[in-house]
Every structure is written in structure tokens, then in C-alpha cells.
Amino acid sequence: RLYTPTEFGYFTAFLSYSGTFAFFLFISSEMAIVQTGSKIELRRVLGLVLTIAMISGFILVSTMFLESSIYYVIGFDRLFEIKGLVFIGVILAGSTILANQLLTLNRLFDIYAKTQVAFVLLRFAISFLLYHLGFGLQGLVLGYLIPTLVVNVYILSTVNLISLRPKFDFTSLSYTAKKYKDLILYNAPSNFINLLIVNFPIFFILKDFGVVAAGFFGLAFRMVMLPVSLANKAVGQVLFRELVNNKRKDQNNTLFLIKNIVFLCCSLPFFIVLYFFGSDIFSYAFGSDWAESGEYVSVIVPYIFLSFIVSPLSYYFIVYEKSKYLSIISATFFAILIVSVFTLSFESVYDFLKALTKIN
Image 1 (cartoon, rainbow, N blue to C red):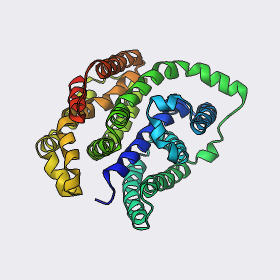
Image 2: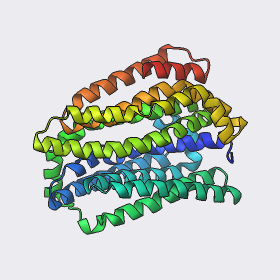
Image 3: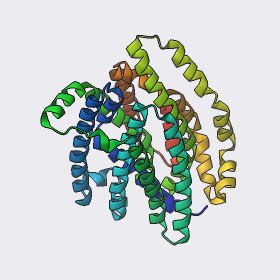
Image 4: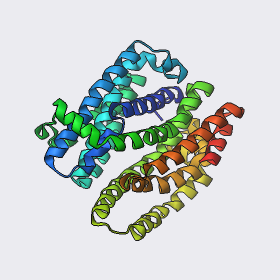
């Protein structure tokens, strides 16, 4: 109700690009944190993870501020005016990834739930305040960055990151890299493709249909995905840790996985309501100017529901070292998506979203 579709379009692009670039900070090496069995092993893994992050961060900041030509190809040139804020967003997104892995390792799921609630409340309050102070788009971005910083500092202090004293000596880094190289090599491509699958619609809509269309889609996608993401992360963290324990105890996972699928399917009524009344709900909640976002929701809700069911189950492939199958599935999907974009003609955003839903 406060911000225009144009402002929200830029903000949506900011979130998508910063989230995608944040992947390159760790290149999936952070997933080794949960698989550590001792404090000394955790110190070694943290040393490797942070070393990769420092190297990757230097490359990112250099290419970003030099405005490398690759950024024009992916449409990031539209955000060059706020590239400094985007880089800060990348760093904070990376610290969020690290913090969540440490919470999972220590089974501090209650802390995760509380900080997510605090983040949402802080984000609303700060964005609202900065809007009335006349900050415009910068206020929307800062309204996201400040709560992220606060929450991450709290989480990292809770898990005593500094007291863990990561090991940065060459021998430790070499040993840890060799031990977890398969985890990185097999999971990084799959995780990157999955990240592109999530953010590609924003990149494509921004580049081909403009900032306003990106704003409409951004609100539609993020409002629907907000509760979905919170639930998925909560379920995913528990599922990941339990699968690791089951693997150590050599227990069968069939019943456990079925229970999780049934539990996630209980969300179906929520998605049915969105499918039939999306436009009315968005008009009532955000004003008549945002009715088009509700129409986008009605188109994409079937694949979001299926993604909600499937996403947490992907941890099974990771824990049981079957990531190559997950990589094949993701790569096939992304290949079909790319081929469709280059071979089909989309006269409107609706045409693109209908194709995207069918592919999903």
C-alpha cells in the first residue's frame, strides 16, 4: 500500500540478485557444517567456508563495481545505481546461510523460529518508518538489510561463532577441502541451478517486460512464498538433521518421509483459496492497484504447492549421497526452461507464467 510497483520491482530484483550472488560466497561448502561430528572438525570446516567466502567476495565486489559485461547479460545493469547496497545484501545473505547451518547443527530450531518472527516485525516497522521519512526505494532496501543484520548478529552470538576459532592454516584447509570435495562438487551445481530456477522468472520478467511487471510478480511470488518458505525451512532443518541421525543409525526412512509428505499436504486448502480468490485477496490487502499481482498468484499457485511438497524432500538426496540424481532432475528442468524461453514467444507476463507453471 505504501510503495509503487516500480519501487517494489527494483526491490524484488535487489533480493533476487543478492540472493543469487550470495551462493558464490560459499559454493555449498557451508553444508559440511551440519555433518561435522566434533568441535575440531567444525573449526576446520568453518575455516574452509570462510576462506572460500573471502576469495569469492573479493571477486564479486571487483566485478560488480567495475560493472563487468556479464551483468548486462543477466539484467543486473538496471541495479547499478544501488550496487553498493546489493553487495551489502550479498554479504548479509551469506551470513544468514552460515547462521542457519550453525542453528541446525546445534538443533536450535526454537531460536530460528523466534528470529524469523522478529525479522518480519522489524522489517515491517523499519520499512514503514523509512517510508514516512521520505527514503523511497532506499528505505525499502534498508528496511530489509537492517533487520537481517540484527537477526544475524543475534544468531551468530548465540552460537558463539567467535569462540569456535576457525582454523585457517594451510594443512587444515587442504585436509578439509579433500574430505568434503564431493559434497561441494555434487551439490554446488544442483544448488545453483535450483537457485536460478527460483530467481530466473524475476530476471526474465525484469529484462523483457520491465520493472513494473517485475514489481507485480515480485509481490505475488514473495507474499505466497513467505509462509511457504518459513514452513519449508523449519521442516527442512528438522528433516535434514533427522535424516543424518537415521543414516548414522542405519534406520529406514520410508515411514518418516511419508509422514512428512502427508503433513505438508495439509496445506492444500490454503493454496485452493489463493487459486480462486487471489485477485480479490490482493486487492483487499494491498489496494486495487495490486490486483494484477493476485492474478499472477492464480497462475503460479499450482507449481508453488508442488514445490512446497517436494523441496524439503531434496535433503534425502544430500544426506544419502545421491545428489547426482537431484542434479540430473534440476538440470533437466532448467534446460527445459531455457529452451522454452528461447523457442517460445511470450506476448505477456501471463503467457510466460503459464509456461513456467506447466514446466514445473
